[in-house]
Image (cartoon, rainbow, N blue to C red):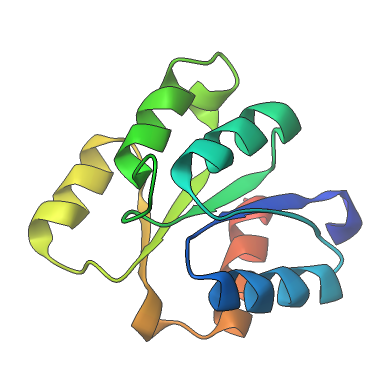
Length: 126
């Protein structure tokens, strides 16, 4: 399987970050879809069925937890691979992510875009 077969959905209200990540993923051969709020993110996820979703927690319209709940109501969405990409780094948020079945949790300030792409590639190979 080659990287050109992979798709990613980036859901974040920080438009600058979204464009940087989108460009980085596309340079690595991914198809990149974007959404700037949770409602749009849920719609895009259910429409495109990306291989992986990068999902912010604090967003307008629907937060990341509401997006996850919406995904879990869908047959495909129950098994969607999600990386929470957020500024929240408190234990309550991390515990909530684990309870929701999302074991990848990146604090935005701890990761460079290239590192995020590398980690996504690694996850998709496993």
